[in-house]
Every structure is written in C-alpha cells, then in structure tokens.
Length: 296
Length: 268
Image (cartoon, rainbow over all chains, first blue to last red; front, side, top):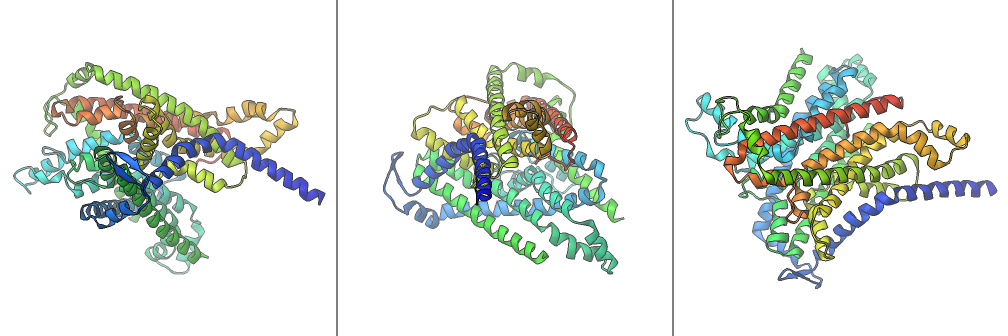
C-alpha cells in the first residue's frame, strides 16, 4: 500500500513536471492554432452579411459547397492535382530511397540524404519562379528543346497555365518529402530476412515483391500523406504557374475570405478541406494498420 | 548490373532536383533581358540593378527581423517541447505533442486564414509582429523535431550523476544538458531562420502592408523587366540557404558525435 502510493506520487510528479515543461509550447499552440481552428469551425456554421459574421446556426455554407458546380469543380481539380502529384512523387522517389538504403555504403548515406534535402530548403517562391520563367516559359528550356529537336516550329503557348504544369512544379517541390519516410522504413528492414528469402530460392525480384515492398509500406504511406496534405492546400503554384486560370482550394479560400469578404463560406471551405485531408489520412492509416497486421 | 541501373536513375533524379537551382545563377549572370537559351554573354548588371532598389532593402530588413525573432522564439519553445517529450511521461502526451507538431502537415493557407480570422476578430493590427507569431507557430515543430533527436541521444546517467553530486535540476540543465544539446540548438536556430526567410503565405496574408523578402519577390513577378534582377536576388538567397544548411548539418552531426549517438541521416 505504502509502496504503491510512493510510486503513484513519483509518477504523478513526473507527469506534473512533464506537463509544466511542455506548457509554454502547448499553450502557444493552443492559443495560435487550436483556438483559431475552433473559431473557423464555428464561423463555418454562421452566415456572412456585408462582411460581418451573423450568428445564425445553419448548414447553409456546407450545402452551398456541396451543390455549387464551380466549387465542386475546384475541389475536384485540387484532389486530382494533388493525387497525381502524390502518385508521381512517391513512384519516382521509391527507387532513389531504395538505392540510398541498400546500395550506398553506410558512411555516405547522410551525404546523399543531405544532397536530396537541400533543394527542399531553398526558397519555394524562387523555385516556382524558375519553373515558370526558365523551364516552362515561352522561351524556356522545354520549348527550346522541343524546337531544337524539331517537334514544334513555334514555342508552345500552352505549357504554362494548365494543370500539367502545376503537377510538374509541385512534384518537383515535394520530391525530397517523399524520399525521407520511405528511406527510414527501408533502413528498418532486417537484412537477414532478404537473405532468408533468397536462400529459400526466391529470385531477387520476388524477394523484393514479397518481402521488401510490404515491409516498406509504412514508409510509402507516410510519404503519400506528407506529400498529399500540403499539395492539396497549395496556394503559390496555382496562382503563379496556373496564372489564376486554374485555381485550387487555397485560392478559393482566399477569394471568399478576403476578396468576397464572406468569412463564413471561406471557413466552411477550409473545414471541408481539413475534412477531406482527415478522410484520406484515415484511409491510409487503416491501410497501414492492415500492412502491419499482415506482417505478424 | 542492377546496381548501376539504380545508381544511374538516382543520379538522373538528383539532376532533375537540382536543375532549377543550377539554371538560376546561369541566367542571373546572362547579359540579356529575355530569359532564354542561347546565352548571350556575362554581366553583373542585374546584381547592381538589384542593389539599387530601396524597397528590397526594406524587405530584407523586415525579413531579417522576422527570421531572427522567429528562430529564437521557436527554438526556445522547441527546447521545452522536445525536453518534455523525450524525458517525461505525462497525461495526454500524444495529443499535446500532436497539436504542437500539427503545423508541419497542415496546409499553410489554413493556418494563415484561421489566424487572420481571429486576429481581425479581436482587432490586432497586422504587422511584422503578427508575421512573427505565425512563423513561430510553423517553425516550432521543426525545432522540436531537431531538438528531440539531440535530447534523445543524451545519456540519462549523466544527469543522475550531477544530481548525486549535489546539483539542482536547474544547474544540471545549465551545466550538463545545455552544453551537450548546444549543437542541436544551433542547428534548430539555423533551420528555423531558413524556413522563416523563405516562407511566403503567412508573410503575405498576415503582414498587412509590410513587405518582406518573399512577398517582394512575388510582387516582382508582374514586371517582366525585373525578372533578371530577381534571378540575381534568387542566386544570393539560394547560396545563403545552402551555406546555412551546411553549417546546420555540421552542428547536427557534431552534436550526435558528442553525445555518442548514431547518425541516422537527414533533418526530418
């Protein structure tokens, strides 16, 4: 009894000091993240009249979102663009992660990872600018190459300002994000499992397919989420590469919140976006759990 | 055979990653207003043109104030968060740490808009200060991530030894823990500084009429004549980012070596 209460007190004091220590950071996050998100959530059920919020609880904003064809079009486009970006980045990143994990000597791994992450840390706006001006532009690299090898005689106007250009820019921007989680998952794989597979007569390809790939699935799923979530809410690329002609969710939120001054509808779109992100995340986390269970 | 095919792919991939960054200085020194091949000659005109813009200097000053303040504040908050999460068990830990790390995955547009709603709601005027508030929020998760790995590799027995020798928790932290995680702190400061300098969405929406570097660059997109001087500016910025990152990486590795940990790779 006495023993248990001493243990209880120690645990309690550990809990108390842990909470005390985390409190400045936690309070900051509650005040500047949780409270604003809660406000947006409340606003989404209100109405907006001449830029003022009127507290009139209703689902009108959500009904508007799910019935208006132009809103649907933008939501659908955002989903298509971010899913294509996710698919492209993860597929292209996997072999690189595999190479660094399995074929690069341990002492050189962190150099490779450092090289892969550097472009990610350089200014995003400058990178988008480069894609627009230098690579995709009227006189840009792609048009120069196409004309050089004689595919077209005149520069293509249509390279910029479309979803394809946006997908390329975004896929380039988020590439390092996809490599890291896959690399971490591959690093965790017990190498003796692969040897066992080959000793038992599997070919290298079959070993990869039946052992390596399933074991690295948690990393792939983390990569999917880590690319999908920021791309669906991207603002700069649709604005600059799309030239405002192919807006995505973030641009629509801006228009409603600031230009139309309809904070209620803007909030509802923001909440809908978070809802979509949550649903996609849950689906993938469930998939992940299935993979983890299958391993046991 | 298989090895070399993979290696070729990885190298092509790296070239693809670096293509824009390599093209940037090429056109920044190119003697032509039109950004196109073939190159026409070497010039430093764009750098001097860039230098003459007063608005740019104001933007650089604002960005520097924001980035330094955000880096210091976020690293302080990061020390608290990382220390608590690596050393203690406490109720609702997963939830609290999840909330702190949330800005890392939440689209920035949603963060900036929800902050804007509440700031306008309680009547806070938009200024450099509001940008700092936003940047501290988004850089704190990175600080926590970097510092967690620094605190994680600490040997708990060092701390216990200090207690046994009569040190108080505070003096133990100052004399033992702080020097050991110092490389992590430096690396966190540099990373947060880099993120803040480059960040656009929060600076754009929460800045009111204050111009910072990324917003200045965004504004110049509309003027084709300004493009070469933006490329010159970009060259300097990218060079600076790479320099800061290399220093940060150096300190991160030294920190891991100091505490006897094993290097597991990149920043994240």
